[in-house]
Length: 223
Image 1 (cartoon, rainbow, N blue to C red):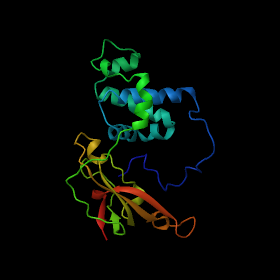
Image 2: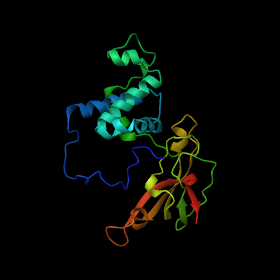
Image 3: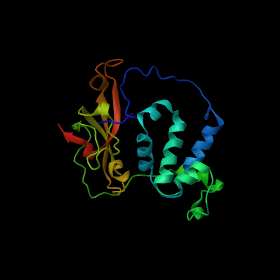
């Protein structure tokens, strides 16, 4: 079963609006980003955990919240789940005492460097690559986490069970399906795989259109 965030190829959501917009449409959007960065710097979770927290919002909340409202709602859940603060502190909007994590606070002078460097996820791995550029592969079906029931995965449902062609081998990267659930990084080979747009959607805007996805080795089987 997929979660509400896995929306690719769904009818009824209307067109995607494009055009020039400000970096933050509202002042509080920038504050939401800043708060998310500052909380992440406390070291109590990783990016895969935070992504899964957003995915776990209820369908009603996910459908009604704006982009940054999703961020803030998921962050509030994580702060309580990881005992960074209590539910009572969250509800009151103030701490009940000093935090053991205070020394890990993100300094303003360090923000630019943090945003520039990001969080590299390439790693050495004992898992040997089994596919090469040009190989035909098929994504597993259903698109689900095979390690944790209902867990996080980066394989979208719209690409599940579809045949594609390996166009690049990236090396080994942290496996989100494990990293989001405290199972370690478990790095494995990651490939760029090209899928026919017609195979994914039934029709294509024009002949020859492709969609390229980055896909972990355990998501794939040979054809």
